[in-house]
Length: 447
Image (cartoon, rainbow, N blue to C red; front, side):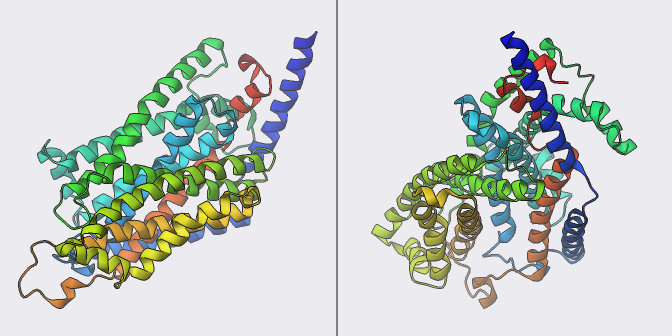
């Protein structure tokens, strides 16, 4: 008798989930069309800027012999950092049995996939000519961190795609069976991607085992991807990069900015799609506590990173630190430290600060601070080589991105947002079958 009542409650809840989430898949909203138009305009402007770069060469950028990496590499490191949120939420929190994170797993994986795709694209852009990427594959040396970076990025992308797709299959089958009024092309997509799903216990067992294996696999890969990215800096002889601290420094910073990104995504998805009952203030409270923890960890590595060189103040390292602390980059440096690192701790420690709107504002500062932090990691170091060129042109000593660089970087951000938007408009953003199961419904009854 109890089981029957429990099953009825579960089935009623599933119907409610279907009604709530299927309505979010509509493409008819004027706001959605306007949003897509804005993203496409930004992307088209970036494509035009890239056309100019391919036609005229990297001379259209502000990069020269000193600053050979510009905001392209800053953007690359930023996107790689953001992509780690997928492993944090869908793997680390899930394996630690943090049930509250279930509504956030799919959001985090979508962000991870979109970010790592655009990180790979921005690297090709940085090479100048796109055909040079094939040289990395054909003539890559195993001694080089560049080839290891390519391998680990590709591996992380594959695992992230599988972690996104496998838990989606039951929900894709629900879309296939219930969205009868969807356009023909969408029905075909659902039918193909559902791979004959029939909601059988054996099918669920395969998916659950696969998810657990992938969840374990992605943890070392996630740590490796940002550690190996840090090797690109640490193995290059420049002030500020000659540090054994860079690996954990990059990883901790990546988890922090990834958490900030998912908080912003939570806020806008919750408001725009009307999902307040699934993404609740409890989720913001938990994410706020997590962000405070990650901020404290990253603060420790920041102190560790700068304290050693600042204590010695030797040679070019001293010049680099002086320029950051009191020189031309001082305003940016201290704003990053205060607003992007200290502010989240001060605001989010009290419970009142862990409400949706305050967390949105704090997370915007975290994201902006993280991007400018990558700028500060890349640019000032390159402008202080240990072996400076004699009689160098004065323009080599300064770097400010050209409009082509800004346009391409803006297009890469728009590309991330476009991928996220399209996936969320094709598939339910909240894992329906997992939520229904948590509410007491048997998996085989989720149809």
